[in-house]
Amino acid sequence: MNTRPMLVGTWAIRFYERHGFALVSPARKTVLLKSYWSIPERQIETSVVLANPPEVAARSFSPLVGRRSG
Image (cartoon, rainbow, N blue to C red; front, side, top):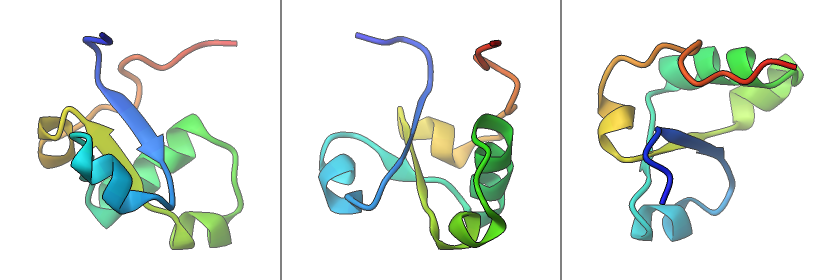
């Protein structure tokens, strides 16, 4: 089991919510998407991000924590 926070961008929201994920706020979503992915602004606007464990969605999250280099 992964003990570090895990973030998932998806359309299958209900599936992931049933499996312990929670939606992050729209503002945090934008920061995370821009930090971890190179995607167009339009895709950011229409995307959601879910976090597991759910507490990650409710607290302040540093986009540099756990960021992979390369």
